[in-house]
Amino acid sequence: MWRTDREDVHMNIEAALTDIIGEPAKKLHTARSRNDQVLTDFRLWCRDAIDTIVRSIQRLQVALVKLALKNEGLIVPGYTHLQRAQPVLLQHLLLAYVEQLERDAGRLQDCRVRMNFCPLGACALAGTGLPIDRFMTAEALEFTAPMRNSIDAVSDRDFVLEFLSANSIIAIHLSRLGEEWVLWASEEFGFITPSDSVSTGSSIMPQKKNPDPMELVRGKSARVIGDLVTLLTLCKGLPLAYNRDLQEDKEPTFDSVKTIVGMLEVSAEFAQNITFNVERIKKALPAGYLDATTLADYLVNKQVPFRTSHDIVGKAVALCVSKECQLQDLSLDEMRSLNPVFDKDVYEYLGVENAIRKFSSFGSTGSACVTEQLHSWVAKLGINRSSC
Image (cartoon, rainbow, N blue to C red):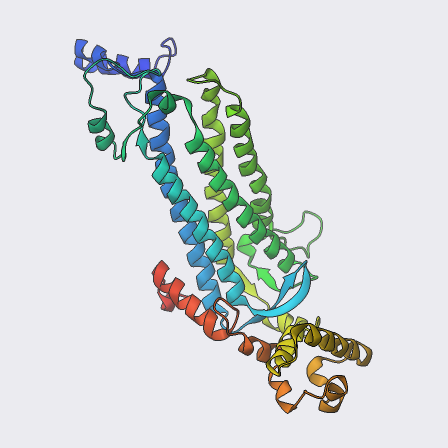
């Protein structure tokens, strides 16, 4: 039975064991300190937490890949500086987040490898003269090996700092995804519509359909970053070895893990409950001359230096602005007035569909490249296409 008059959890455990087996239980604390015991428990907890987060990352990756599979061939405007830049396949954009999440999982797994060393037997800070076998206890607890320096074992929290840093990077990626989808759900963009299950209305405006889950994901990122800053500040300037300040390492760690798992789960749920407004997106594509760079590539293929090509296409866009038309609407004579190298094959480069077809470099948004990327992720994540 737990008793508050006992000093801590360790004394309660020892007392409970004494009630069960008697005097031999008093040997429990031999060659141990609360310092190395707590650190051992903490590393075990963080190790399991990493495994949980990695599984949550994979669930979000699956949701994003399935969303990509459902929207094959859909072209959207690609942005730089939040200005229209070039056309991209929606699948390509979604897979960008999948790639980021894969690196997030990799950082956690790398952190787990460095974390997986056992402090038990370091005692308070100096080890012990008793004949203990630290390798045996490390193996029993599935650690790689015991930590080599007893002072380091009980005093450092770099494994938690690395863990919370990895969580913070995940939070940043999720916040960016949240921001994009919040923008795309707005009336100004209108690219996505969240279902009623992942949106909320207004208390006074009946027409509202707010993408609240992704706003909360965006907001929760501040918590995860704050947890990291809390721990960094806590550890700054602490002399070796153990200091009671380190008791404060648990709360930000627990909060970081709980928050990041929640953010990943909410993001996956949202991804499974949105639809892309194809007609609205198609109507938006003509604005911005998204095929301008592809037209410059056409000229480069005709042996025109890129800087010269850039200037020629700039003049072509200016002509279109004055005529209120698209590049593909210019006549061949109008194009040749800018440079005689233009020929009728130029129209194979104009329009967003043609522009997409012309992308061919590894990792580009070209249809063949994106299809290959998708196949790779479907296989890696074990996705059943029939379930999409």
